[in-house]
Length: 112
Length: 113
Image 1 (cartoon, rainbow over the protein chains, first blue to last red):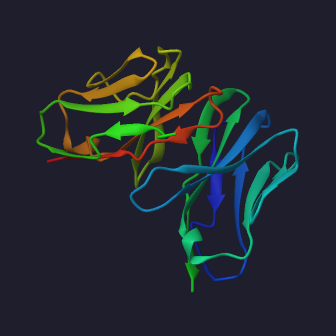
Image 2 (cartoon, rainbow over the protein chains, first blue to last red):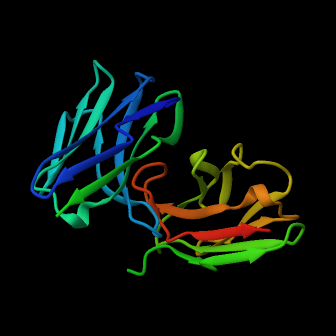
Image 3 (cartoon, rainbow over the protein chains, first blue to last red):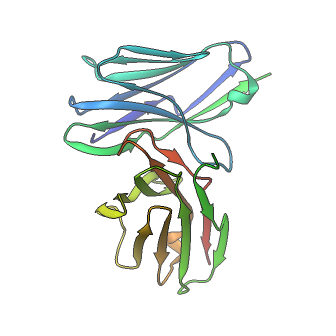
């Protein structure tokens, strides 16, 4: 992957609402798309990932969708809780550049 | 599983001093990565080892940085001499699947005065 754009840079929601973070990439050959959650003072934690042969993946309140035609993928968090507050990073790899390329991050704040 | 272990967690040093960061990957993982995180540049890959061999060090900023992996359970990142612009959080990550499924350590917060 060459470039990953992540939006929004900050997101504030009320507890119980849903949160959606979107990333776009440029390399059509990219085939692996993980999402990381980073809490203050800690390392990024892998929360979910998807590969290019799958369009959607769910794990409890977290889901990721992939649109290869449009070259974007999104993280969906339902029934948000205050402990979901963190910085979320998308990433991609594969294709012409096997390195894991990270987005700039989204600061999610869930207000009680 | 203890996860990826890094030491020290915090390091404050003066410009010109040598700094050594340490990492113990998750047992059984054959890939190890060193990253640097700053507000301005985000997460940057410094170097990637596979089966203890450096595969890609193109992200190492300059000759002042060096990394070694003498065995499957230990790696070091050394900065000599350190400069204030090296101040950042340095993460080590390991993976059982090459570039995929990387697990990060807690990081070392480095401040060079």
